Length: 401
Ligand SMILES: O=P(O)(O)OC[C@H]1O[C@](O)(COP(=O)(O)O)[C@@H](O)[C@@H]1O
Image (cartoon, rainbow, N blue to C red; front, side):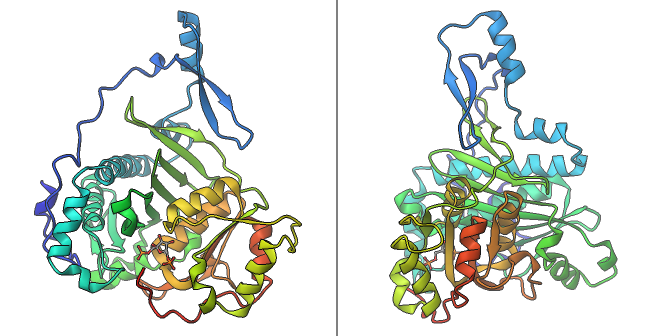
């Protein structure tokens, strides 16, 4: 079924846009994995697996390289005790994200954005969904439908959760394309998602109520959390509740390959990430914290550096690898499909996700699109930040840029 003809989702912004012709390229011809031997594996100090070119290749070396090849995402799942249903679902999610990766890199993006601007949607402001948000949402919904494994999808792009199937085992929450306001200047974007078990005890309820309550599960009940970063590399980072692992899309074989097994956020980093144009709207505690670490007068006696992409997945991904804190102090980000999955990944990597006061995962969602401040990062940096007490930005006038 063509995505553009989907009609069962109550999209906030109708009509659905046609997919650009280059959004779904045929997968590259697959190559036997044993033919990777032009590279050899090495491990970086931060734990990432990297490939180094080989000078010459013999059959023995090819065999050894095949044996040492890091697994694809599905091979990895096959080696764990992942449920078959979950593997099917993850296979569909990764396919959807490969399509979104192609979409965000498509030369048709500018044209799509101009078409939308011409339709008057710009008047809805900087937070108005962009065409690619809607297309990404359709791509994900369509793959969940064909997986047969999802009962309900709750998305940033839909006012209400969409009931898909009565008997399917999982609940899927997602921000299909975060950071899309940056798309015209090719800044990284990302998909965020979480998977819960369907609550069978709610099966007797009317469908809308069932859909809502299934989607409002506490983050502590997440079965899987993940994001896909669309940047110079396309990286799928995922946790099944036993560590956080990242897989990098190898375009030559069309597969996500394990590159960052069992990630650990350094207990302390030296980077803070925040939109500090908001400095004068910040509360005293947050200003003091930033002033202190900038000068190297905090618990860590080094001057901190600033990095801020303004794309949550990119800022979080950097923080996961280098450590430090990624801050969104105003109540702007969404608990259910942004803060919860990212906090789960942070915790599984030894870090912390908080709203400045409380652990994110212990906040019970009461509304699907509930917003809150979000702080993610290294354990020691997070505890130091929270010790300032007053770090949530209450003044939130809405910003034009
Ligand atoms: O404007 P601010 O306060 O810097 O907020 C930026 C944050 O908002 C986001 O763009 C998300 O906003 P949307 O959910 O409206 O796309 C994040 O990617 C980013 O971290």
